[in-house]
Image 1 (cartoon, rainbow, N blue to C red):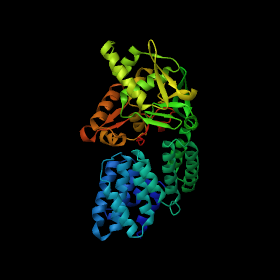
Image 2 (cartoon, rainbow, N blue to C red):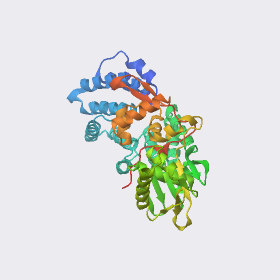
Image 3 (cartoon, rainbow, N blue to C red):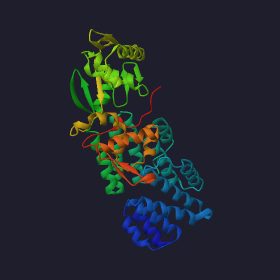
Length: 415
């Protein structure tokens, strides 16, 4: 191998993009273009990096299919980092198959992990676990083994398995120290700190306090009836009812859960569920219909009793009723209701990356127009910022201080 190319590749492997550019910045051959593209990506110049990798792939052509496939994988990684999730999914898969056919198992494994990370990001955890089960991290270098453990930790966090997440992050940190890459070590340390940060607000008997992820996991293992406002699911002993696609029923359940063991007046339920202040007989009849639907949905877990003023929850077998609410920043009380409404969107944006509205729609399983309206509302409230215009417009939000938002991220909706 060309000694300058080999030296530049070694510099990139240890996270030294400037050292790599010093060796290949003026060269125009295919290998140098590819290394320059990777170096620019490490420096954050993603648009320029993508251009260089495409030029390198064209320069390699059909005479060097393995090298060309490596460029495709590198471009796919840039697309992932820049949250361009609507790109072609077939190109990275075909590139991985090409690398496997040419015996480049290391880069093929990296391509597979990239596919898995994309699945985790958009909440397709079952598919990600199946793919990860067939991936062997043993032959990977320390840096990539750390990335493998980060994927495992990410899935464990979304599954609310705090102990598994801590173990995976511990293994990741050991691999990162062996790799000697400061940026990777800092990323893992930040992930470990987030496990000790508040993950949800617990509301029970009119009192409120913050919970860490392991405390949420322990709470869900009890026989309490939990109204999960983070994922819009009602959980209990042998009960798991999703109300994601039934917003009126969820709003009623949440209002009743927050007031338990007290009652909620009919006019309050009408205002919260239907968003109107009119309290007449037609709205009361509509409320009775929705309460009946909620009773059927939660049958076997909790009853809903009518009182002289409104309604109250009556849990079976004397269980406690607990509400898990999103852990929003207490410093912005004026926008609490707005943050509650768009909590999952804010959780995705808080990763520090720039997202397109189409990528957010894909990750959340919502329509692009719904996401655009939410972004406009959050932008007007000063909760998000935009960069660029038109199709190049991207959205970003500052991370929530000392909060972990795993409960708000996309998750497969139970049937």
